[in-house]
Length: 531
Image (cartoon, rainbow, N blue to C red; front, side, top):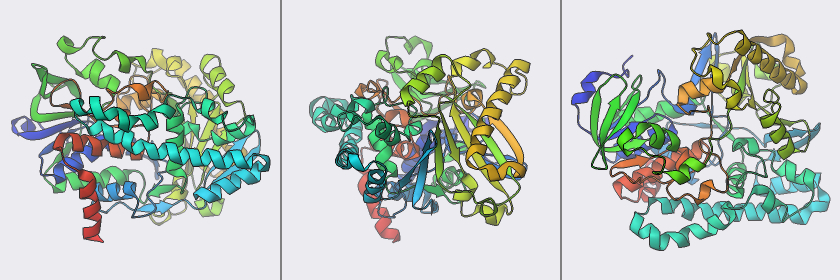
């Protein structure tokens, strides 16, 4: 394979080394490469892409983390422009249709429709007596989401300017980010059913109304309000085309290059030490490994103390998950499978059920999320006719599997396998409750656990969403590209928020911080030049 790490790279001079090839790392690399910088991306595993990578079993392929993306349907949208810029306009998107999410709560069906007014009117149709509250709520979501632009842009400011002008850019978003979702929603309505329906997509950020920041709730709702989209060719198209861009501008993306330490001298990052003992040097080091991993594992012992990053270490990792991958021997059309996702809840008690799950019922997820990736991908039937795929996801506390975390795959013993079988049966039963017509067409089933996520991402508790999106998270000003170590930068979802779009923007604000250049204007001009 052409992109396997070679020790010959030790003798090259790089402007930037990026640890991790998730969207945050690759987008940072793409921006820097297009700005003329010589970039090296180091990926510890045998596949690039982070949560955009896919895996194959028999004739089936599944994504592992990208199930839909909002705000890319129009070429005039900023997120679409950024994707076009880092992929040289090669990445294309398939629209999921009028209904992109469907919540089924205690047997009641609620559709989330594409378009601001359409969704408001749909919710009013379900709760006509709450019309005023529903409209006020959606308008407030727009307002809070809009204020995030200044909040996240402020992260590109140098420290001296942030201390003075930064407060004024943060305050609009901040005053709502420190409130919980339930706290804000109960200001609009006391209708508990309506509150649960409006929070039915909370699995996208991993926290229920009582614990989540309203800011992340507003960002997610607004992100999808104009519909969902799926990358043509599958999630791997995202990292494939970003890698092509990086390489076309002279950068390198290599696999099997696990970083052991970031090399620091006199509080300045100068390079990295790999697990094989190699050292590679660069002018800038950028970590896409997550805030906890970066500061608690990659920083050398002499610089690593619990007091160095106390606020970040107070924030817990987000919830981990299990996923059932289903392969079918008939097409989506033949099986009449939808493009929209399904959020399946047993009842309206979102907060209470989650607490019961964490404390007493780890194998019974309070929400089951069902995605139909082959139905969303317009290239699927052309490449794999007569087949289809489904993913069924549930939350699962990492602590319940911790005793097996250091054992190899397929060598974790009978008890572990029994747990997997029990969870597999539970998720399959939930799936068949909504699409019973697939029962005789299932030819492949495989369950992944949080241990798989830990292995492929390096996140210590198998979390998929990085740091928890609590009100406390958004108070931490240290979650920004520039760190207290000179020439060491962060990128990835921890410095923005959860999601592919957020990870992409993290690459943008990290590159802005490094280049000291207005890349937003560069992106806008790029679109005009290729139109």
